[in-house]
Image (cartoon, rainbow, N blue to C red):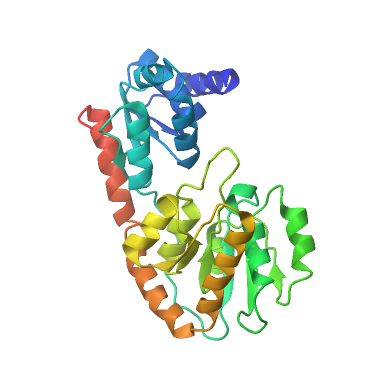
Length: 304
């Protein structure tokens, strides 16, 4: 953390700025708040899902909540989802944490015909749950889906590749996709599955940027009924939610049932895609950038 702070100080020494904007409260938000006070410039910090779990855990320690509230007392705080903003505000005793969705510069594209193609987009880590997707697919009859693409990288990759060889449908591993490759990968899919799971410390997935990108592309989401992601899907109708029991086996079965229903009713996928495309308008530029432009201008002017 000390090295990161020194690097930030060197960057500030080399140029001037009107606002310091931190992504994640820890560690960047803490560093940004201290630097902003030293430099006399406004500070904007965006909280994410991992911040919520950490804040709620440490805020129970006597004296920590007030110390953190003091640290960010001069900072403007935002979050990409209403639920995340509310939980951050509750943990810090603030009522002014606002929601500002993250932009997704992915163009909308028409949905192709044929058997549905599933896509997982994200890190191959336990909280993201790509392994749950493969386990759920193993419970389904063949012929429902053309293939599944796991786009990303991470600690589970070896196990995922090994397990994919035992499935009855092809599994593609294109690696981490960005820019035009990401847009093409989303365009080739029919639905994006984000099967997160609850970790032992109680942490759950927040609102991954992949969800915004999927909706911007006009692709419906499949996700567990918990957290900010469930709020997004329930509010927009742009996807399928499945029950999220605490045990792993129960989650896998619940996801399998959701995928079975999806695969057996292609017309439903087309209807969901239309809703996803409509919901995605909020995340595609220029509309998505207007909110952030207003936040940054207000922060710089001291009126946020």
